[in-house]
Amino acid sequence: MTDSKHDFTNPPLDSEPLQRKKPSLFEVLNRPIRFPSFRTDKTSEESPEAVEPKPERFARLRDRLRRTRQGLVSGLASLFKGRKLDDEALEELESRLLLADLGVDVTNHLIRQLTEQVSRQQLSDVPALLQALHDELLAILAPCQQPWQPSASRPYVILMVGVNGV
Image (cartoon, rainbow, N blue to C red):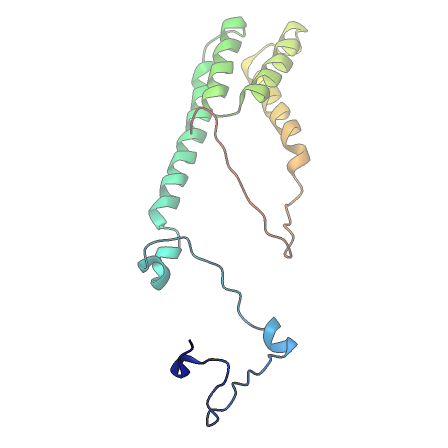
C-alpha cells in the first residue's frame, strides 16, 4: 500500500525541475584546493599567529646551535693547550667530536685520518693537527657545497635528526 503523500515517482506539476549548471573547465581549475584539517581546535585555523612559528622557538634553536659551536671550538682549544699529540689526546678529541654531534661514522673517519697523519709524522704540533682537522671537515662537506634547489612542482620533506637524542 502506497501513500500518495509520499509518492516520489510523480513530483507535483507546479515545481520546476532542478537544473544544475555544469562548471566550466576554467572554473574547476581555478577553485581553491581545500585540504582536510586534522586539528580538533578551531582557534588555530582562525588566528594567523598560531600558524606562524613562535619566535622563542627559533631563539632556543639558535641558542642550542651556538652552545654546540662554542663547546666544540673552545673544547678543542682547551684540549690541546700545553699538551703533546698522543693517543690519549686523540681519544679525547674523538669524544669531543661525538659530543658535538658529528656522528660516529664521521668521527671515526676523522680520527683514522688524523691518526695516520700523526703516525707518519706529518703532524707534529697542535696547530698542524687543527689545520688537518679543518681540511678533513671541508673535504667531507665539499660534495654539499652546491645550493639545494627544490622542485617547485613537487612537495618535499626536510628531516633533521641529531645524534645523542638532540
